[in-house]
Amino acid sequence: MKVGYRDIRCVESGGPEPGVGCAGRGVITSINFLEENGAYEGVDYVSYDVLGDVVCGGFAMPIRENKAQEIYIVMSGEMMA
Image (cartoon, rainbow, N blue to C red; front, side, top):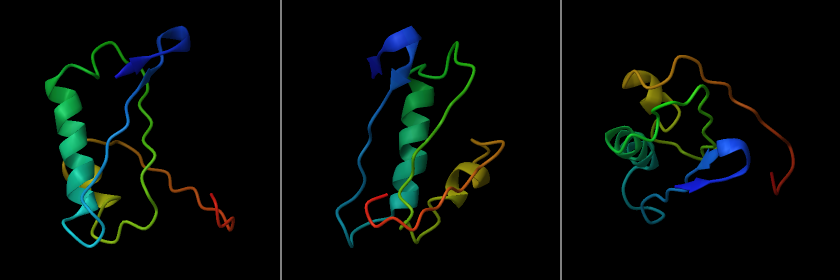
């Protein structure tokens, strides 16, 4: 975890190899790891950036596991977005 300007915390997590495993499972595994290591203590707001091509429930995993109260999906027509 990197701590930056005004105590903003930033974490990058990977996923399985393309075509192997479930990226949605990777999302929830990352969230659980952060919880177990106290990353959410003293935090007012949490934002995730999840790949839009997750086809195996990546968006649904945080809701199913009661890890999110709200989810916003932002889309763009830009190829590099």
